[in-house]
Length: 389
Ligand SMILES: Nc1nc2c(ncn2[C@@H]2O[C@H](COP(=O)(O)OP(=O)(O)OP(=O)(O)O)[C@@H](O)[C@H]2O)c(=O)[nH]1
Ligand SMILES: [Mg+2]
Image 1 (cartoon, helix red, strand yellow):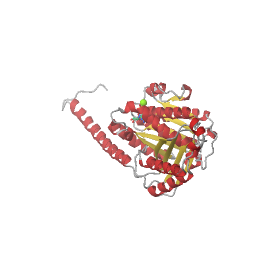
Image 2: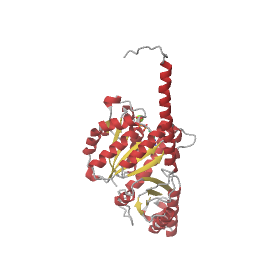
Image 3: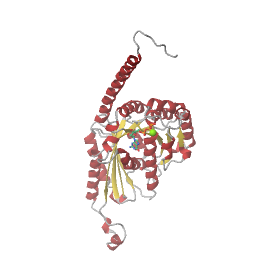
Image 4: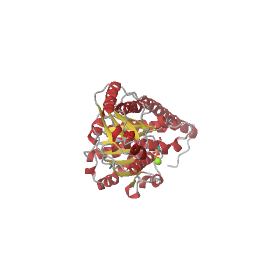
């Protein structure tokens, strides 16, 4: 499936950078174009795979290239003021070649949090292709303002996109490692999940023909539930000798394996993917739609395995709308990606909203009491000092 990626803010830019890196290394060709939008010049400079010609610095007259300092209302305002620049860059690309847009942002800061819903809304207004969002939630310990930003942006972003894929930094933090240091590996992990999902159907150039290839329409139909989505992933290295000497010595039979092995491998991989760590942890029962993609060398992509895995996922989620297929790649790994769309039982989102409401209340109360305290501090009782103006 062919995508145009638009990363907004620092996290948005870095995640898009990581997706492009994945795409180049795997030569999968699912990224037609990648654009980075930011209010901070220094954030744009750090990008390795998005050239300056595909970068847009917004809000220059207002914030002078220094970012919006986690003020997402300002992020939304300056992005709206300069959205024409973003749209004319999108207009340069061959939109007829793409299947969808993916707008990516961290929701806890200012630029991405405020700007992503603005850009999504404009794209939807102009183009008929679906506009998906990828929203990164802040970790719990990032503090109240990040939580409040994320809760507000989430509400808006989910309304402006056809589907919001969510990634929760909190679930992905590694113990003993600061979040900052961990971003590189977290972004690479996210890029791999999205990469396997979206490159399915594009083929790897090996010319292999799958039995039941996943194509773009299946991904689009799965995401057409609307609402929010989460992605699970699991992979296993094949325990078999590399092709070559051994298989030649044994007349090629060394590579052949029992069909039952392939079936079991796939069902257990899909189970691990769906029940392991999701990009957004949630209760999978009640998901509206699902898609199973199994990637690996063609000779181990058992159709029966994928069928069984689909049936299992139907039982787990309680929905009949589980699509599935394979994605042949020349690799010694087999990987399963499970996309669950229209998930509603998400404790983390509920918690985020509750904390945001509390933070908002505290901030308002604090603002009022500060104003009163300042009045008190400078009050001179009945004797008046006239202010200058
Ligand atoms: N997964 C991931 N999350 C990140 C990364 N960088 C930042 N974040 C998260 O994204 C949130 C928003 O931060 P930024 O993207 O830096 O904010 P911004 O959109 O640039 O906005 P301002 O800096 O306020 O102008 C943070 O609270 C983090 O949770 C990253 O590289 N990967
Ligand atoms: Mg920033």
